[in-house]
Image 1: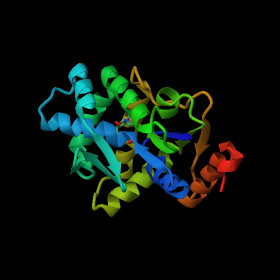
Image 2: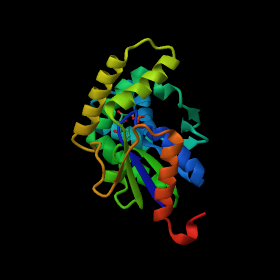
Image 3: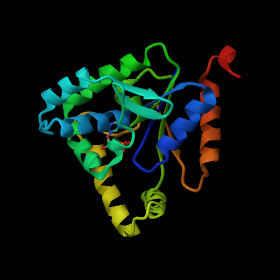
Length: 221
Ligand code: DC
Protein backbone atom coordinates (compact mmCIF):
# COMPACT_ATOMS: atom_id res chain seq x y z
CA UNK A 1 0.00 0.00 0.00
CA UNK A 2 1.19 3.52 -0.75
CA UNK A 3 0.39 6.64 1.27
CA UNK A 4 1.40 9.98 -0.23
CA UNK A 5 1.94 13.03 1.92
CA UNK A 6 2.30 16.27 0.00
CA UNK A 7 2.15 19.90 1.02
CA UNK A 8 4.10 23.10 1.48
CA UNK A 9 7.31 23.51 3.45
CA UNK A 10 6.67 23.90 7.17
CA UNK A 11 3.39 21.98 7.25
CA UNK A 12 5.03 19.28 9.37
CA UNK A 13 5.22 16.72 6.54
CA UNK A 14 8.63 15.28 7.34
CA UNK A 15 7.98 14.73 11.03
CA UNK A 16 4.57 13.28 10.28
CA UNK A 17 5.68 11.05 7.39
CA UNK A 18 8.60 9.65 9.38
CA UNK A 19 6.43 9.02 12.43
CA UNK A 20 3.68 7.43 10.36
CA UNK A 21 6.10 5.09 8.57
CA UNK A 22 7.68 4.13 11.92
CA UNK A 23 4.26 3.49 13.49
CA UNK A 24 3.15 1.30 10.58
CA UNK A 25 6.54 -0.42 10.19
CA UNK A 26 6.63 0.75 6.53
CA UNK A 27 9.33 2.31 4.39
CA UNK A 28 9.64 6.07 4.08
CA UNK A 29 10.65 8.05 0.99
CA UNK A 30 11.76 11.67 1.42
CA UNK A 31 11.57 12.96 -2.15
CA UNK A 32 12.74 16.45 -1.14
CA UNK A 33 15.96 14.79 0.03
CA UNK A 34 16.27 13.15 -3.39
CA UNK A 35 16.05 16.50 -5.22
CA UNK A 36 18.49 17.98 -2.71
CA UNK A 37 20.94 15.13 -3.31
CA UNK A 38 20.94 15.72 -7.07
CA UNK A 39 21.55 19.44 -6.45
CA UNK A 40 24.45 18.64 -4.09
CA UNK A 41 26.18 16.33 -6.55
CA UNK A 42 25.57 18.78 -9.43
CA UNK A 43 27.22 21.56 -7.40
CA UNK A 44 30.16 19.35 -6.55
CA UNK A 45 30.67 18.38 -10.21
CA UNK A 46 30.19 21.94 -11.44
CA UNK A 47 27.19 20.97 -13.59
CA UNK A 48 25.17 23.95 -14.80
CA UNK A 49 21.92 24.04 -12.80
CA UNK A 50 19.92 25.01 -15.89
CA UNK A 51 20.98 21.99 -17.95
CA UNK A 52 17.92 19.75 -17.48
CA UNK A 53 19.06 16.84 -19.68
CA UNK A 54 22.49 16.57 -17.98
CA UNK A 55 20.87 16.77 -14.56
CA UNK A 56 18.37 14.09 -15.58
CA UNK A 57 21.29 11.88 -16.68
CA UNK A 58 22.80 12.50 -13.25
CA UNK A 59 19.55 11.31 -11.59
CA UNK A 60 19.79 8.11 -13.61
CA UNK A 61 23.42 7.54 -12.65
CA UNK A 62 23.08 8.07 -8.90
CA UNK A 63 22.33 5.33 -6.40
CA UNK A 64 20.29 7.16 -3.75
CA UNK A 65 19.38 5.08 -0.69
CA UNK A 66 17.61 5.72 2.59
CA UNK A 67 18.82 3.80 5.59
CA UNK A 68 17.82 4.29 9.23
CA UNK A 69 16.72 7.87 8.68
CA UNK A 70 19.88 8.82 6.73
CA UNK A 71 20.33 9.53 3.02
CA UNK A 72 23.17 7.96 1.05
CA UNK A 73 24.61 8.37 -2.44
CA UNK A 74 26.33 5.08 -2.99
CA UNK A 75 28.07 4.58 0.36
CA UNK A 76 28.38 8.26 1.22
CA UNK A 77 26.07 9.71 3.91
CA UNK A 78 24.89 13.09 2.57
CA UNK A 79 22.14 13.71 5.18
CA UNK A 80 23.79 16.84 6.56
CA UNK A 81 25.39 18.12 3.36
CA UNK A 82 21.99 18.36 1.61
CA UNK A 83 20.57 20.69 4.28
CA UNK A 84 22.91 23.67 3.76
CA UNK A 85 21.49 26.96 2.48
CA UNK A 86 23.62 26.66 -0.68
CA UNK A 87 22.08 23.29 -1.53
CA UNK A 88 18.58 24.50 -0.63
CA UNK A 89 19.00 27.34 -3.16
CA UNK A 90 20.46 25.05 -5.82
CA UNK A 91 17.61 22.56 -5.41
CA UNK A 92 15.05 24.99 -6.77
CA UNK A 93 16.25 25.04 -10.44
CA UNK A 94 16.99 21.32 -10.25
CA UNK A 95 13.43 20.56 -9.11
CA UNK A 96 11.99 22.91 -11.74
CA UNK A 97 13.59 21.08 -14.68
CA UNK A 98 10.99 18.90 -16.45
CA UNK A 99 13.60 16.32 -17.51
CA UNK A 100 14.75 15.93 -13.90
CA UNK A 101 11.17 15.49 -12.69
CA UNK A 102 10.51 12.83 -15.31
CA UNK A 103 13.65 10.89 -14.31
CA UNK A 104 12.75 11.29 -10.62
CA UNK A 105 9.23 10.01 -11.20
CA UNK A 106 10.58 6.78 -12.69
CA UNK A 107 13.18 6.41 -9.96
CA UNK A 108 10.61 6.99 -7.20
CA UNK A 109 8.25 4.43 -8.74
CA UNK A 110 11.09 1.92 -8.99
CA UNK A 111 12.06 2.48 -5.36
CA UNK A 112 8.44 1.91 -4.29
CA UNK A 113 8.01 -1.39 -6.10
CA UNK A 114 6.62 -4.09 -3.85
CA UNK A 115 6.80 -1.95 -0.69
CA UNK A 116 4.39 -0.60 1.83
CA UNK A 117 5.47 3.01 1.70
CA UNK A 118 4.86 6.50 3.05
CA UNK A 119 6.21 8.97 0.51
CA UNK A 120 6.55 12.66 1.11
CA UNK A 121 6.95 15.62 -1.28
CA UNK A 122 4.99 18.05 -3.42
CA UNK A 123 3.73 15.90 -6.31
CA UNK A 124 3.59 12.37 -4.94
CA UNK A 125 -0.19 12.03 -5.01
CA UNK A 126 -0.83 14.23 -8.04
CA UNK A 127 1.89 12.97 -10.42
CA UNK A 128 4.07 10.14 -9.19
CA UNK A 129 1.62 7.77 -7.48
CA UNK A 130 -1.82 8.66 -8.85
CA UNK A 131 -3.14 5.23 -7.83
CA UNK A 132 -1.94 5.46 -4.21
CA UNK A 133 -4.48 4.05 -1.77
CA UNK A 134 -4.34 7.17 0.42
CA UNK A 135 -3.30 10.67 -0.60
CA UNK A 136 -3.01 13.39 2.00
CA UNK A 137 -2.25 17.05 1.41
CA UNK A 138 -0.94 18.35 4.68
CA UNK A 139 -1.05 22.07 5.16
CA UNK A 140 -1.27 24.84 7.73
CA UNK A 141 -1.78 28.58 7.50
CA UNK A 142 1.25 30.60 6.31
CA UNK A 143 1.49 32.26 9.73
CA UNK A 144 1.48 28.96 11.60
CA UNK A 145 4.09 27.44 9.26
CA UNK A 146 6.32 30.51 9.55
CA UNK A 147 6.01 30.49 13.36
CA UNK A 148 7.10 26.83 13.47
CA UNK A 149 10.08 27.45 11.20
CA UNK A 150 11.06 30.60 13.07
CA UNK A 151 11.05 28.67 16.36
CA UNK A 152 13.32 26.00 14.80
CA UNK A 153 15.67 28.65 13.42
CA UNK A 154 15.89 30.47 16.77
CA UNK A 155 16.71 27.14 18.41
CA UNK A 156 19.55 26.73 15.89
CA UNK A 157 20.92 30.14 16.91
CA UNK A 158 19.55 32.25 14.04
CA UNK A 159 18.50 35.82 14.83
CA UNK A 160 16.25 36.39 11.78
CA UNK A 161 12.79 37.90 12.24
CA UNK A 162 9.45 36.17 11.86
CA UNK A 163 8.60 38.59 9.03
CA UNK A 164 11.72 37.53 7.12
CA UNK A 165 10.76 33.86 7.52
CA UNK A 166 7.23 34.62 6.33
CA UNK A 167 8.52 36.46 3.25
CA UNK A 168 11.00 33.69 2.31
CA UNK A 169 8.26 31.10 2.77
CA UNK A 170 5.89 33.02 0.48
CA UNK A 171 8.58 33.00 -2.22
CA UNK A 172 9.15 29.25 -1.83
CA UNK A 173 5.41 28.50 -1.93
CA UNK A 174 5.06 30.58 -5.06
CA UNK A 175 7.87 28.64 -6.77
CA UNK A 176 6.47 25.26 -5.69
CA UNK A 177 2.94 26.11 -6.88
CA UNK A 178 3.91 27.61 -10.20
CA UNK A 179 6.55 25.28 -11.64
CA UNK A 180 5.39 24.17 -15.10
CA UNK A 181 5.83 20.45 -14.35
CA UNK A 182 5.23 18.80 -10.99
CA UNK A 183 3.67 21.84 -9.35
CA UNK A 184 2.61 21.42 -5.75
CA UNK A 185 -1.13 20.74 -5.62
CA UNK A 186 -3.47 18.34 -3.89
CA UNK A 187 -4.46 15.36 -6.05
CA UNK A 188 -8.16 15.62 -6.93
CA UNK A 189 -8.92 12.77 -4.53
CA UNK A 190 -6.54 13.84 -1.73
CA UNK A 191 -7.65 14.38 1.84
CA UNK A 192 -6.69 17.99 2.58
CA UNK A 193 -5.65 18.16 6.20
CA UNK A 194 -5.08 21.52 7.87
CA UNK A 195 -2.92 21.14 10.99
CA UNK A 196 -3.20 24.58 12.62
CA UNK A 197 -3.41 24.23 16.39
CA UNK A 198 -2.80 20.46 16.34
CA UNK A 199 0.11 18.79 18.13
CA UNK A 200 2.24 16.34 16.09
CA UNK A 201 0.71 13.41 18.05
CA UNK A 202 -2.80 14.51 17.10
CA UNK A 203 -1.85 14.78 13.43
CA UNK A 204 -0.28 11.32 13.55
CA UNK A 205 -3.31 9.76 15.26
CA UNK A 206 -5.64 11.16 12.59
CA UNK A 207 -3.41 9.84 9.80
CA UNK A 208 -3.26 6.38 11.36
CA UNK A 209 -7.08 6.39 11.39
CA UNK A 210 -7.14 7.37 7.72
CA UNK A 211 -4.67 4.61 6.80
CA UNK A 212 -6.60 1.99 8.78
CA UNK A 213 -9.81 2.98 7.04
CA UNK A 214 -8.18 2.29 3.63
CA UNK A 215 -6.33 -0.90 4.54
CA UNK A 216 -7.73 -4.27 3.72
CA UNK A 217 -9.39 -5.60 6.90
CA UNK A 218 -6.89 -8.48 7.22
CA UNK A 219 -3.90 -6.07 7.15
CA UNK A 220 -5.17 -3.96 10.08
CA UNK A 221 -3.50 -4.38 13.47
O1 DC B 1 10.80 19.27 1.18
P1 DC B 1 12.19 19.88 0.93
O2 DC B 1 12.34 21.28 1.45
O3 DC B 1 13.30 19.00 1.39
O4 DC B 1 12.29 19.97 -0.66
C1 DC B 1 13.46 20.45 -1.27
C2 DC B 1 13.12 21.07 -2.61
O5 DC B 1 12.65 20.10 -3.53
C3 DC B 1 12.07 22.17 -2.59
O6 DC B 1 12.55 23.19 -3.47
C4 DC B 1 10.83 21.54 -3.16
C5 DC B 1 11.39 20.47 -4.07
N1 DC B 1 10.56 19.26 -4.14
C6 DC B 1 9.86 19.06 -5.30
O7 DC B 1 9.89 19.88 -6.20
N2 DC B 1 9.12 17.91 -5.44
C7 DC B 1 9.08 16.99 -4.46
N3 DC B 1 8.37 15.88 -4.63
C8 DC B 1 9.80 17.21 -3.27
C9 DC B 1 10.54 18.37 -3.14
